[in-house]
Image (cartoon, rainbow, N blue to C red):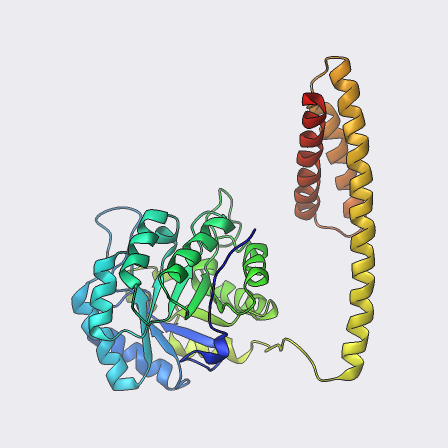
Length: 361
């Protein structure tokens, strides 16, 4: 995948401190609610980007959809009183216009917006000539090109202070999460754009405060650049997403027990050892690719025999045999069942493609 995104190195951002902490309530519900929540956060943090939803896109109508411009005034009051940078979600050019008029420091595009290229382009057009940091959440479905496309559109409008928010994906089976993490897609995004700040929305992935320590630590282990966590002075009273919010004090207790990690070490022994192991990984990867290429050659040969004898490429019974046998072998070698399934499916899909191409030739 090629792209021409041009962004500033995040060391040159107006927000130079890392990690970035986006803390605050899911929704702005009243000035008093905002003040009490901000005061609880201020006890523990001075340099927080205070977040709150002003316009809330809901799945179904007649749900709480935010207080709009009135709530924008409350958010700006928090900025003035507590000295926090402030941020909120924008879903259309009107939202953006009002945020710019009010002096909002950062805006983000939500998952429901990212999934729609028309909506993203409309916001990109409205951002031309504007100098403001913009973060883009991943789309609802696990589609990395769609996420990158949204970033490209915003970047194409001249926005160089660009960031991404990993908030997980809605799958048919999300396990214990509200949105399944699919950490691999966030890692791939970081690999494409090493200078792109990527923060983790742990609240929307978790859906339950009990999962937040695990999700937050995982994001730190994967070298993400910050956390977005929903905090409310009284979560039981929250008008939206009450179950996934926590008090500022509870949030601080979690943050205290997270283990910070660095991207490198100045210890020469560590560096030497890692380089030796990386060289070993490189050699194993090369051998693995060679073996896969040999396997595909055999698959093409089988495809040719099938074609000559007018036999279908796909053989369900054979595929089931491969799957069952390798699941048993892989699990005995300490590999997870989900990894084996995913790996074999990719290999099988490529074998089918190779055999089909051989038949067509």
